[in-house]
Length: 252
Ligand code: CIR
Image (cartoon, rainbow, N blue to C red; front, side):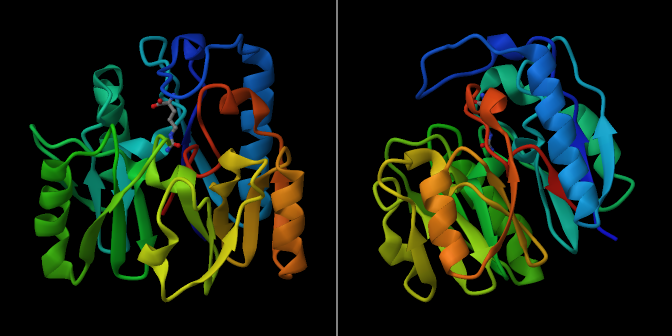
C-alpha cells in the first residue's frame, strides 16, 4: 500500500508566496476541509495517509511536494527556490528518513519538487523562477548512478513545470502548450488543456485514477472522453495560493 505524506495547512497560509496571482482572501476552515477531502480521496484510492503537522511560521508548508523528490531507490530533499520555504524541508526529511536513504540539494542549488516530472527513468525539470541550473546539475549527478536522466525544460509564465504538464495515463500527458513546448514530449500522446483553463494541466495520477480539480470542467470533459477515470476534488481554496493537486502530497 503506498504512503501519501501530506502536511496540514498552516494557519499562516494567507501569507503564502504568490508569483502569478493577486492575493485573495483564503478561508482557512474551508482550506482545511478541502485538504481533508483530498486526503480522503487518496485513502479511497488505497493510500495510507501520513499527515505532518502544519507550522505557523511556514505559510506554504501544505505544498509538501516542493520539498522532496521520492523515488523507489532514494529520496532527494530539495532546496526550495523561495527563501521563505527553505525551513519546510527539516520536518519532511525527518519523516522521509524512515522510508528512504536521503540525498540533499546544497547551496547555491535551488530546486522545487513541483518542477520535477518523473516519467519512468527520465526526470524533466522546469528551469523556473524556483529551480536553477545548479540545482538541476546536482540532481543529475546524484541520480545518474541510479540510471536516471535529467533534462532541464524551459517554461514561460507559470510557477512550476507541473503547472504546465503532468502524466494522466501510462501513455498520456496533459499539457498547457502556452507554458511549455509540447515538442519536448514528442514520444507521448498529448492532451491539451482547454484554452479557457490555463491552470488545468496539474493532475495527480494514482494507479489508474486521476485526482483532478473539479473547477476545470472543460478539460475534465476532454480527459473523460479519453476514457480516463477522474476523481474530482474541490481544490479552489489552495488554488488561491497557487497550489494544485500534485503539490499537496508525496507518494511513496
Ligand atoms: C509557492 O508559491 O511556493 C506556493 N504558494 C505554491 C506552491 C505550489 N506548489 C506546487 O505546485 N508544486
